Amino acid sequence: MSSPRTKYSLHRLTGQFHEPNREAMYRRDIEPRVRLESCLTLIVAALVFGMFVISDYYYIGVSTELYLLLAMRTLVIVSCVILAFVLGRWGSYTSNVWLHALPLWILATGIILIVPLRPDSLATQVTAVVVATMAFYLLIPNLLPVVAIASFYLNMGFLAATAMVADISAVVALRILLLLIMANVVGFFALLRLEKLQRGQFALLQEERVQNQQLMDEISHRKSLEAQLRRVAERDALTGLDSRSHFMERARELLLRSQHQQAPFSLFMIDVDHFKAINDTWGHSQGDRVLSAIATTCRRSLRPQDVIGRFGGEEFIVALPDTRLKDARVVAERLQKEVAELLVIEELPDQRLTVTIGIAGVLHEKADLEALVNQADQALYAGKHNGRNRVVMSNEG
Ligand SMILES: Nc1nc2c(ncn2[C@@H]2O[C@H](COP(=O)(O)OP(=O)(O)OP(=O)(O)O)[C@@H](O)[C@H]2O)c(=O)[nH]1
Image 1 (tube, rainbow, N blue to C red):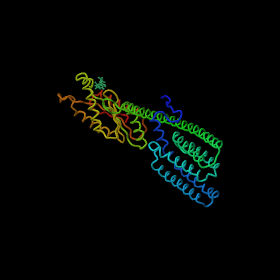
Image 2 (tube, rainbow, N blue to C red):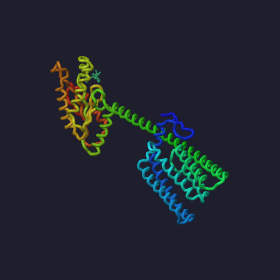
Image 3 (cartoon, rainbow, N blue to C red):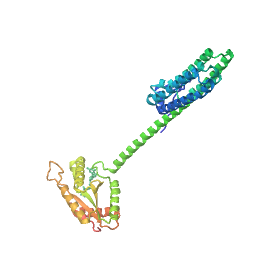
Image 4 (cartoon, rainbow, N blue to C red):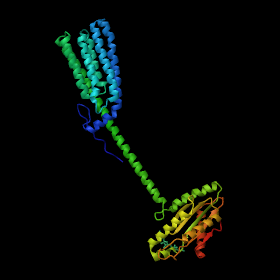
């Protein structure tokens, strides 16, 4: 079984699948992981943002600016924690992608707001913006276009705030701009590569799942075919009795069990008398009906633990576990009587069926099934030879 490689195409700039269905499937697949990662990132970001309170205190000391910074940092931290909770509960990555983008905007706004509050630590802030930009691209699991826009907002906002508040020359501004462009280019292409790799992996996994499913379907189809074939091989189509080979299999097991338990085992063969005449006079379909009626009579008359098979043509065979030869004779005679009561032809109530039965059996000595069948067949032959319509026991039993 072979299936063609899954064809998929990715957008050159976003790394997303061109097919909306596949993209939605991919997002559903990664949703649990993304939710968890988003929550963890938010908690870590809140901690890092909070830790800067120490440096604020050392640089500014207790002052109005410190309180303002504290208030702003608290706001960002609380927003991050609330968002982590909201994302954990409702952050569907397929329908509420904007929720996953919100942390970026909150963090970016927090970083921009620090500029007017601490215009003296510009170098640290530039480093913080570069690190945040890289973190947006690499650490926060989000969609490339969403990250790119949030990063653009952070970078432009920071540059604008710096130009307005801090006293920097045009050359310094240009250097900061180039640095931020570099951070964005590196971050963008790293995330683009990651997005493409992850989606490629997902497509392969999908293909593997489809192939596995096809394999499972094939296996179950073959199993059901096998079961069907086994049923056909085990059953005789006309009478529904065991086929000859299946009967021999089951009878051999019964004989072994009887020997193991030192219990008696009997077997008899039934042959319909003058069956050829029935076929010749009333046609083959009437002959078939007679055979089916005999099978039904056998099933009804015998115990559930007895195994009945169609040995061939108009010959039946029965294995009787835990049955002595003399008891088998009683069973055979009862069966013979029941068959004789069957109506062969509705319009001819006097027309009666007769059968000849040959019996063989063992008490608890070792015996071969084939040998027992032979003995029963010889007894049957003797019965036929002596005028039919009789039950004959094997001399060797
Ligand atoms: N209708 C029908 N006839 C079958 C089937 N299988 C075998 N036969 C016929 O059964 C007949 C058996 O004939 P014989 O072997 O001569 O046996 P008989 O006529 O019963 O003679 P005795 O057994 O000696 O009494 C043959 O005509 C077969 O064609 C079957 O499935 N359906």
